[in-house]
Each structure stands twice: as C-alpha cells, then as structure tokens.
Image 1 (tube, rainbow, N blue to C red):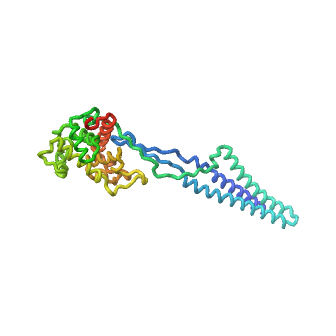
Image 2 (image 1 turned 180 degrees about the vertical axis):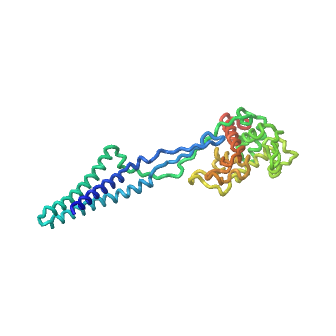
Image 3 (image 1 turned 60 degrees about the horizontal axis):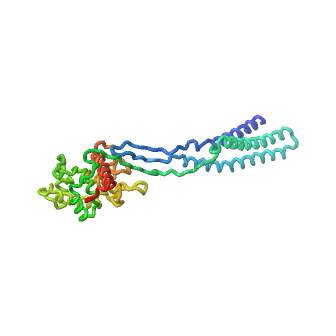
Length: 333
C-alpha cells in the first residue's frame, strides 16, 4: 500500500511539473518578425507585400489553458492536502497511517513549490517567457508599388513642343490634362504624325496617338484624316476621356477594402496607371486576374507574356508625365 501511495505521489509531482513546463514554454519565441515578399515584376522597382506573422491564435489558446490551469492546480493541491489531513485525523495514532497522510500533504506542497519555482526560474531567465503578447494578424498590411524610371526612345526626357497647340485645344475640349495627353502622344509615336504600328488583330494603329481603325472611327476620325495631327490628337483625347469612365471593370475587387485594383477617380499615378493599361492593353487589362488574386490582369506574370507589352508601356507613360510635370513642359510653355 505504501509503495502504491509513493508512486501516486511521484506521479502527481511529475504531472504538475510537466504541466507548468508546458505552460511556460516560450511561446513568444515562436513569433516571427515581419515577412516581406518582393516578387520580380518587369517594370516595377518594388512590389512589396508585408505580412505581420505572429503566433497570436496559439498564444491565445495557451493563455486560456494557463488561466484555467492555475485554478486547477490550486484546487488539486487543496484537495490532496485535505485528503492527507483527513487521513491524519482518522489515523488513530497509527504511525503508518500518519506517514501516509504526511506523504499526501508533502506531495501537494511539493507540487506547488515546483510549479512556483518553474515560473520564477523562467521569469528570471527571460520575462518574455512568461509574458504572453497577443497580437492580431492582418492578412495584408500594405502593398507598395513604385515604378522604375523608364528609359527608351519613346520616353520623354526633353521637351517636345511641336504639337503643343493641338494638345492644348484637345485638352480644353475634353477636360483631359494636357500633360497627360502629351505623355501618351510621345510614348505612342515620339511625336511622329505619320507613325504606324505593326499589324495587329485590330488593325494598324496610326498617327500621333496611335489609334486603331475601330477606335478612330468611334471617335469620328476617318482613315483619310488619321494622320492629321489636330484631329488625331483630339480623337485620342476623346478616347482617354472615355477610358476615365470605362477603363475599370465594375467587378473589380479591393485590397483589404482599401486599395482598389483599378481606380480612375484618384487623379494620381494610380488613375494614370489604369488608363494607360486600358489604352495599351484593351478593356480587359484592368479586369481582376484569375491567377493572381488581388491584382489586375495586366499585373499578373504567371501567364508569361500576357500583357508584357502593357507592363512595359505603363512606366513609360508615368515617367514621361512626371518629367513633363517636373520640368514645366506643359502645353504652350
């Protein structure tokens, strides 16, 4: 009987010790710093997504176990000491029974001492080992996109004022910023009114704004007048005006409810980006990507060369626009 009780006491002490060893295991040491993922996207300097990766759900779970555990250990120790005390009372002076009662009491006290000692030792080594820091995990905290400074013969690095008057008239008639029109014109044709693109499914794009036959016709520009600088620029301005309302698919989703895949209402680089994508890649360029959730179709590189030209085109438009704006190369200046 004595051997059995001694084994029970050892088992009790072992369970309590293991319990507190697990409870105070350095959960916080599992938590990681921010994880930053930077995909290599042609035409982009940074396309960085930052995730705050913590063990918050696990820490919450362990913290609750700990809170309940403290109460359970205290109750258990009290019950064990009560058993020992009761055995002592009914021992009737028997040395053997009194010894068994003392063994129960000593086991309970020993368990509490070990539990408190494990806490104190861990706290002395590192207070963080017994301090649960609970943080929520956001899916995506930020997405930052900066474009490379594009280079090439069709990027405006010095003023080109030959068609400033035509651009100014078109800007006034359509309400489109003349700097935007100038940037598109230069990237499309480098200011050559007789420029022709390579043949495409939509035909050959022509003139200063590189308008396809279908686009030119929809804006009232005949093929006979396609190379006329004033008429071509005006038709191109009307097309950009149209894209302000149509470039973004109505089914576009949002990044965490904050940053839209496509938005032409911001009147900034994001707006210009969306218009440029549609101008070069067509109306489906800004549709939500199937293979790259949270991105527009033109941004997704999974499908290889799909929209590769558009990804290279957009930085050129934005760079040209920024150069025009920074240097005061507005129409007529």
